[in-house]
Amino acid sequence: MTDPDPLRPDLAQAPPRTAQEARRQARRALAKARWEAELDGPWPRARAWINMLLVDHGVLRAVYLNLHPVGRTRPPRAWRAAQPLPGQIARLARRHGLRSVVSLRGGVLFGSYPLEREVCARLGLDFRRAVLRSRDLPSREELRALIVLMREVETPVLFHCKSGADRAGLMSALWRIAMEGASAGEAKTELALRYGHLSRGPTGVLDAFLAAAAEAEAHGLPFERWVETEYDRDAIRKLHRGSGRAGGLAAWIVDRLLRRE
Image (cartoon, rainbow, N blue to C red):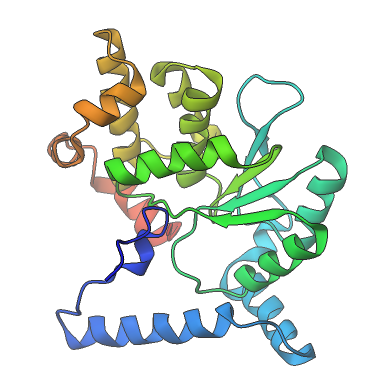
């Protein structure tokens, strides 16, 4: 048995504990099989477009992509956004010389995926997947792999999740730390309300992660050394849950109203 890919934690799936969970996993498996297949013919492509626009809420992102440059380098070496439509990827490649696209979304559950994969191949862009979670923290192994990925992708690179708020914010913060030498305190501005991120509720665990990294830096421990020697994912999770910031109205907004992945 091969070791799990640290950039694809979505491949590891625990056995279902209930019949409802088993049915949900079966539906996800069917969607994954459908959208990993090539779009062979007009009907599969039309179905992918309908799914992207209506089921995956792409019609909203056609109006507002939540696109922003990352860091202070000009011209930007990295961008962050919500899930782009194929035409938006093409415009970024044309206007900003985009060379790579990294999807931070888990599971291959929507028509957005084959359409994105297809346009990147047509334009000669390097398309990668590096799964992050909006309500949980990456493991030490995942953080190592993310830093390696950032150092090897051709720039300019676009990082995106579904909404461009939480996972794209965390990846942008990691980019600024690893690639631009920013402190964790400086990089935490990538997790801000202006991008749609809520620091309260379950997504606030990402803020707790950067706060812990900033505290270690204040005691003379650089980020990557902190990750290797003192990073305690379970302790940060527990601290966030016990802070009183993980639930309440913000949790309802994130989970029920915005339905963040």
